[in-house]
Amino acid sequence: MSEEFLGFERPKGKVGIRNKIVVISSVVCVNRVAQQIANYIENAVAITHPLGCGQFGPDFSYTQRTLVGLGSNPNIFGAIIIGLGCENLSSKLIAKNIKRAKKPVDFFNLQDVQGGSKAAIEKGVKIGKQMAEEAKESKREPFDFSNLVLGLECGGSDSISGISANPAVGIVSDKIIELGGTSILPEFTEWIGTEHLLIKRAVDEKVAEKISSTLNMFLENTMKLGIDFRGIQPTPGNIEGGLTTIEEKSLGTIAKAGKASINGILEYSEAPKGKGLWLMIEPGLDVESMTGLAAAGAQVIIMTTGRGSPCGNPVAPVIKICGNPKTCDWMASNIDVDASKIITENKEVNDIAKILWQKLKETCNGEKTYAEILGFEDIAIWRCSAAPFQIFHSQ
Image (cartoon, rainbow, N blue to C red; front, side):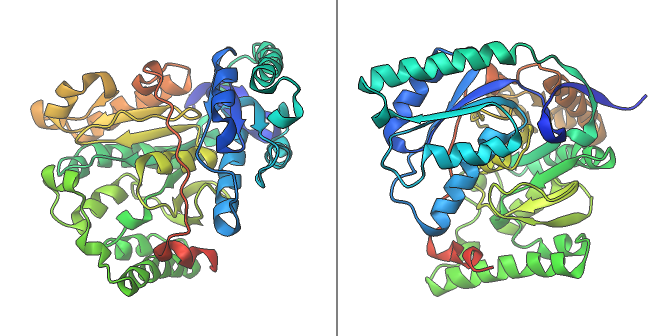
């Protein structure tokens, strides 16, 4: 019998594992309005952020693509976009692009609603409640794992992660790909020192060159600023956790991607152009990274954390797996899968991978992760205009 999960059929051949309504603010000025609207709608989440006004160039493009991607994610049944009315990243523009996913979308600007914020909230709630009623008609059906896009994340890493939780995630990622699905590995600054291993896995010379040039140009740009990036990694928390070099940290990072061939490199929040394993340019910032993964279409994210992390995502459920016995005990309410049994009970990595696979299936079938239960819905959009990252605008 083939591996299956129960999901929601979406237009254009997509499959969701959640059935949410998103209320997106196009600009920081209406964040609280969007949040208030979401509070009154069943199974709704607010996508708020500090951006949208006066942005231009690459930052404008990144913010637009990310918000559109979050609204287009298969876990979303429908989207409501709230604007102020004078920003350049307009609610109409975001709505127009989300509509390409062929799902219910509505939008309006607060300045166009007589009565101000109170009237705008009432208007949004009315639209949202109607969407929520329509969403109830969607029922879970069986789908195979070729329909899944898995996000691979790590945060609060320690010396145990790379030999316990991370390789277990790698086994699961490989299985998704073997079943015809897709995995995305972000955090490109945490590939440093392992690029020779990633290059060997590239599907062709073009992809190999992209991996090499991306890292080389980033390091060259930081050097021009008088910064040796390899000297500021690992972070203080990583060092306290036992990591001593960026190479050690990077070896753990890429372990999450298993052994599959690498099909290409994506820009931040860009959707994969096919199945299989993809790398994403993103500087290893947990919440920004998971926001980018969800915007790229990941319906679920697995996050390894050695020292512990509570963050989640409003669009894609986040499964936390930890290999540190102390953290698994100390932060039990945040950890979904205990990989520390590799140490405490002499379990094999494969044993933990089987447990993680079962947890992944249960999550896809609707079981909530701890981050979901706790209501942790964190959003941050990467701003790529800092000098070391400007190389990506011209590539």
